[in-house]
Structures are given as C-alpha cells and as structure tokens.
Length: 508
Ligand SMILES: Cc1cc2nc3c(=O)[nH]c(=O)nc-3n(C[C@H](O)[C@H](O)[C@H](O)COP(=O)(O)OP(=O)(O)OC[C@H]3O[C@@H](n4cnc5c(N)ncnc54)[C@H](O)[C@@H]3O)c2cc1C
Image 1 (cartoon, rainbow, N blue to C red):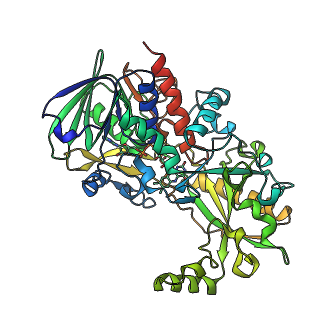
Image 2: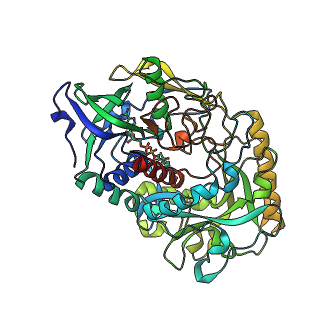
Image 3: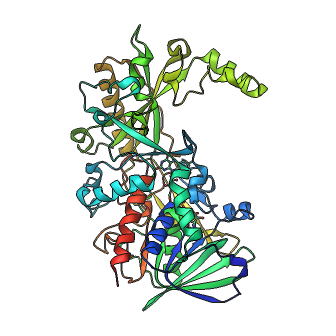
C-alpha cells in the first residue's frame, strides 16, 4: 500500500523487517521479491509528484575536474527513480537499451582496483535470465548469431580484427515498472512512502534506525531488522559517508567508500563513409528492428573476448548512427520549428535508430557516426565526497571528482583503431578518425562508489552486498559494481537485486 508520509506523526517510529531506501528499479525489485516471500517491507522514496522541484533540488551537487556537468540532471527523485529520464524510443513507449556484462568484465583487469567481481559469470547467469523476464525483454541472447534481421537476414559478419556482431535489446519503462509498482502499491506486505527522504542511518546490534524527513521538514523514524540502500551510486555513497561521519556504525576501512566512480563515456570520433555504390540497407541489421519473436533489438559490434581482455584494452561496443545530409538536417529543423508537416518529417529522420526503414537512405544519409560506448576502469581519484554546501534538510551535498584519465584515453585510441580496421576489412567502407575528439562522459550510468570485494580492506560491501563490518546494512545497485564494462547497467542492476533478494529471503 502507499503511505502518505505527511500523515506519519512527528518523531513516530515505524517497525518493519526490511527497510528499503529508494524506489528506483533496484529498490522496487528487492522490495517486491521480499514481500512476495512474506516479509514486511517499508520503501522510503524521496521523490513525490506534487513537490517535484524541491525533490530534484536534493539531487544537486558540485563537480570537480571540469569534465562532468550536472549531477542533478543525470538522475531523478520519484517512484521509479531515474527511469523517469529515459529517452530511448521503443514500440512499447519510452524505454532503455539492455545488455549484460561480458564474462571478461568480471575478471581482475585493473591493477588500481584489485580483484574483479567476487562472483563468477556462471553464478550470475541465472539472475540475468530472471532479469530478462523482470524487464519484459526477450530471451537471454545477445550474440549476433542468435538474431535475424528484417526479412530474416543474418548479421553481416565482420571477417577480421576482433569485432563480432552482437545486439542490445530494447524494453519499455512500463514493461519494467508497471508490475513492480502494482505489487508495491497493492501488496499487503509493502508500505511505499513517497516524499520520505532518509537523512540519517544509525546501526544497532539487532538492526538499524533510519531517520526520515518529510517534505514539510518533520522527522520520523523506521526501525528495521535489515536496511537496503537503493538510492543510486551517488546517494548510496553519500548516505554511507554521512553515517560514517556521524558515528552511525559504518567504517571505511578500505578507503574505497565513495571512490571508484565510473561512467560509460561515449565516443563519436569515428565516421564511416560507405563504399561507393553500397546500399545502406545492406547493413540494416545494425539498425533497431523487431526480431521474429517480437523482441526489439539493435545490432552492434562487440569486441570479442580475446581483444577486450587484452592488456588494458577497454571493453567497448560500436553502434551505427546515420549522419543526415546537411541540407536535409536544416530542412528538418525548419519543419520542426514551424511545427507543421509532421508526416513529412518522417522522411527526414532525426539521425537515430530506424534509419534503415527510410525508402531511399542513400539519398538522405552521408554515412554513419560509429558510436563507441566505453568502459571506464575504476580509479580511486574518481570519487563522491561530502561537500560544504547543504540541501534543504541541512545534509551535505555531494561533490563528484571525475576525469577521463590519460591512460584510459590511450586505450581508447587503440579501441578506435581496432574498430576502424575491422569495419574497413569487412568492406563496410572508409573510416576516418577525429584524433582530437574527447568522449562525452554523460551516459548517466553511475557506478562503483561502494565497490564489492570479499576483503574489507579492498571494498565497501561483501559479495552479498552487505556493508563490511555491519550485520544489517546492505547496498544494491551499480554502486556495488567493482568494474562496469561498457554495458548499460540496468540488466545487471536487476540481476543483482534479484540475487540480493534471494540472499535476504534465505536469512533467518
Ligand atoms: C537519461 C537516462 C537514460 C538512461 N538510459 C539507460 C539505458 O538505456 N539502459 C540502462 O541500462 N540504463 C540507463 N540509464 C541508467 C538507469 O536509469 C539507472 O542505472 C537506474 O535507474 C539505476 O537504478 P537504481 O534503482 O539503482 O537508482 P535510481 O533509478 O536512481 O533510483 C534511486 C531512487 O532512490 C531515491 N533516493 C535517493 N536518495 C534517497 C534518500 N536519501 N531517501 C529516500 N530516497 C532516496 C531517489 O529519489 C530515486 O528514486 C539511463 C539513465 C538516464 C538518466
């Protein structure tokens, strides 16, 4: 059921078995799984529709390093979390791209952050399979060989150079959220509390007390046997840093708390000009399309394991986005400004997915930008720390230290050359590289600030997501990822949330 937090009496304490902080996908998955297993769950969510702007102001923060902008614009406070900002069109409405981590993403590959994932790919795989269903996707199949294109065409093979065809699957926000929200709102075991911002955590021998601020500033508490932080990678770190600073029972023995922040920079330095006479539809498999079973996929090019795992090479994924001829782009924007002739606009695509359905793509497109979605290795220097500025509840706002390290850029240069060489060798056309280009860090995929490691001296949470040195405090979400590959995080977040729910269900 939904609880109106403004009706909870000041200073009252609510008792529950499990308290979840954050009603984004991660928190909702854990909550609904545990409620289905008969546990009483309170879900505290800062965001609330009527008080929208004030809730988003709690997401403010500062950035140091010059490259990253807008902590507030890259996440969202609401029931459903940051999915409110999703912008990928899918047949079922706005949604997201999904893809799992690659097996080699879990290996120990980065010397600055010892250890890879403390979970093997075989252990994670069943949770990926369950996550597919939870997200409303097709089968757990991401190799290009598993999918045919429009008209049954297979992926164009990349003969050489360490690139292989692969796919993203696309899923709508409602396919993910509707069942979760229905269970959270209608379930007799769940109390979903929008407008409830957690401002303090205090651990006790048999659980924890969470202090909540209402939108009117009144405080109340939740006492729970177990608490799960599901606030996203910035807020999970912020709440643990606050707890550590106030003597609430969290210690940072590893020195990693808040550190190892990762994004998925996006690089647009490669431009593909198709071979003379080549019809763009020959590579239509690399456009978004519906497969025979109804799953919407986007063909992409993946580094194969031998290259991606090699010698400091970043994992990466390449997608083709058409470059609309300049005159048509101008016409398109003029039509858009005039707000007329929407039907005509369809013949002048905006440059994203769907290009292969154009009746004459060779007349409309000048070639393709090869979009590289990149791994960022974990580094201590990229970190969330508490700043001097405070939010409306007098809580220190976060400061993000972020930079794209020169060593990582050197690896990006290798990735660019590998991809360019493979595309040219496969006969797609000529690839030019803008050597001076710097990748855009704003994929909105935050990860790594409460890294998972079995040893309390090397990480913040153990392999079950339990905060080291505590019995009752857990973290779920991409903040626990020790490394993050190139893969959009949602599928792995949901898989790990299902895994944590199983662990909590099995605890006495
Ligand atoms: C524009 C955009 C596009 C994206 N596209 C994709 C994509 O295509 N594929 C993909 O895999 N991922 C995508 N992502 C990333 C994805 O949305 C996030 O990784 C995902 O939402 C994280 O889920 P979460 O539940 O861990 O955190 P969130 O969704 O951020 O939810 C956290 C919730 O916790 C609440 N909260 C935080 N602090 C507190 C507190 N102190 N008290 C109470 N509540 C609190 C917040 O209000 C929020 O509702 C995109 C993100 C954005 C912004």
